[in-house]
Length: 262
Image: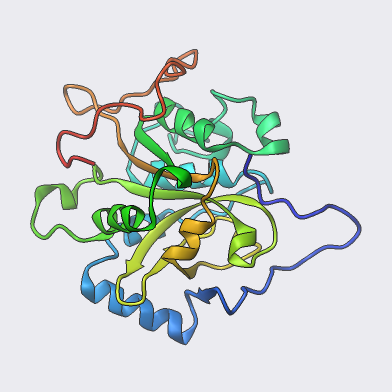
């Protein structure tokens, strides 16, 4: 299970300091230089779509739900149901179809549950555990996901895939255990990934070595690639309409997006 939960008690915290030997704060002078170089090299394809939707998880164990909220809204998927007032918009409380939300609040979700929720809410989703992919293979996935595609039509549409990681914070020298967050960019020169940490009350967005993040995805942890699920007319495909219709899908989910191969 994944959930950003420090031990409860009388002590309270206002944020945590990033471990300097493994993480580089996004807003630091070095973090800004890393970002600028990556942007100029064209390996920040999903950054702006995700930055528009940057979301802080509303419960300590909601990291998986918060990551999904960010990505589903970044892909401009219509949830087909009202959030508040007259507005249809993804929020964590809407992601209650595959697992009771009160249970998620206590124990979080794992990678398979993350994928089921994504598919039930209009996304195509494939998942890969860290044990199934080598470091070089993971780097190829990252480059394929983060690199700008020039003038291809898909670049201006929300059909390109988004990378989300489920990892062990301890490997990064951070407090806590399992966690989910989206990855928004890659600096190929320094082999650094930009993690938009959804536990913003704890850690700011930060750069981390790709090899270290790969190490942090060992065992049943891993990564997910999400893109919009569409019907024959290009309409969003929502799996949950009175029930969890996509429970039977295997771990690799639906066929790839015909428009971008994502």
